[in-house]
Image (cartoon, helix red, strand yellow):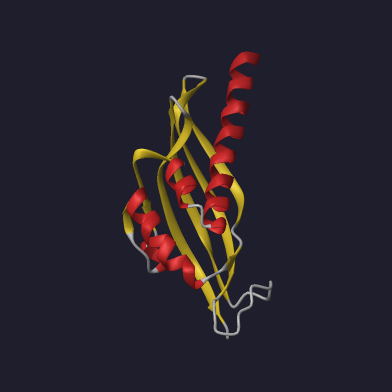
Length: 155
């Protein structure tokens, strides 16, 4: 590989990492316009392993907006990111896959909830599979699949 190809690969990895981090921030902040903007027009999301829905990203964003009202405090931690770029004979292609573990502590809303930060009473964890494509607007998600491995609930 040449230095130019190496630099392009590094830049792609940084841009892909920004999309994955942007995903976590959008969900945690309830910024559903930002969530939608991370996807290609045909992008899809699958939360079925966590008891959720699967479908076009816009429809899933609507479902998330309703569901996340139950959790006014949430913090996605997406770690152990394994990025695989399409390889076109030594040059990066226009598609990528990221597998990454997640830990998602959340606080349920309740009558006594005053907005202060308290210990989470719902935690979910597992692995994401993100698929991405290079577009004219940069890297965008073509798919997100949640593979929930465990959850813990306490009152």
